[in-house]
Every structure is written in structure tokens, then in C-alpha cells.
Length: 178
View 1 (spheres, helix red, strand yellow):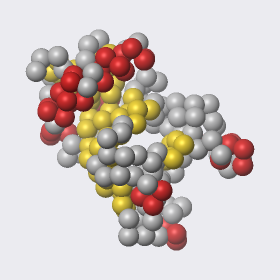
View 2 (spheres, one colour):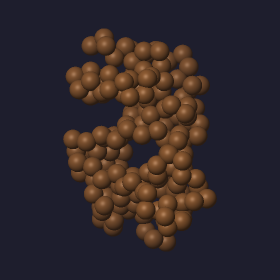
View 3 (cartoon, rainbow, N blue to C red):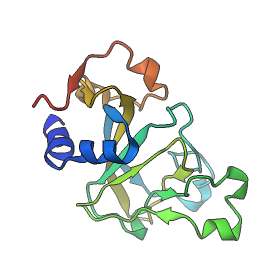
View 4 (spheres, rainbow, N blue to C red):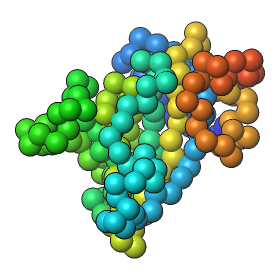
């Protein structure tokens, strides 16, 4: 995990690019690699995983998520779906709004960065016999670029919904200190 962070944020200068884009520095609070499977039609209305439109409201309005595909993500893999900022829940089913969905189809060498607090999004459902495998990093605003020293341990648990409280007192390592 530390080598991944070093490669992505230092060697490929992602930390610098994100700071230039947002004006903030971040702490990497959580990392998770997961696989999303097909859900039969009869169960699609159930909340199996994040397959319903939502915003991640417990997070800061400046929290970012980074998605890295472990395998190519095509339409058959149930790509994540994201609406542009400003689309409201009550407008989701309107035809003119539905045409604005961004389906996150990705090659392995691409990354997605988005604000889960401001953009309605959902996990797409893979076609039968297909799956989506991706790595997700949660970035929370910080005074300097850091990562939680217990990232390896935390990946065994669910993503914390209240990062300010969940990471209180957790030791952080500076990203520049490699």
C-alpha cells in the first residue's frame, strides 16, 4: 500500500495535481480493493451494495474519492454511474437528466477522482457472469499530504462514514517522507 501511495501521489505527482486543482492538501484515510458482482433483476431494488443513487453525506464537502480499476471496466462490468454536481434526487428519473449520467468505463491505467458528497452516484450492476474490481481511496482535507499509518489494518473493516471522528488520534505519515 505504501509503494502504491508513493508511486501514485509522489512519482506521478497526483498530490501536486490535486492540490493545484482543489487548493487543498489531503490525508488518505481509507483504502479498499473490492469486487462487485451481478445482482439478479428480482433483487435490484434492494440495497445490496451502493447500487442506489446517493451522496456520501457524512463526509466533508471537500472529501474526494479516487477509483483505480484493477481490470478494464466496460459497460458489462457495471461501471459506476455519476451525475454532474447539482442534479437532485427528485430529478433522477427525468429523461433529460438521465442523459447526463457519466458511466465510468475505464482502462487499467486510468483513474477517477470525484467528490462523493456533491455528486449523486451509484455502483453499476455487472452483467450476469461479470464483475467489477477496483481500488478506492478516501481523501480527507488536511494541513499537509499524509496517510493514516494504519491503512493496512483499516482495509479489513467497512469504510468509516464520519472520518473526522473515525480518524481522531490516528497517527499519520507524511507522503513526502519516503
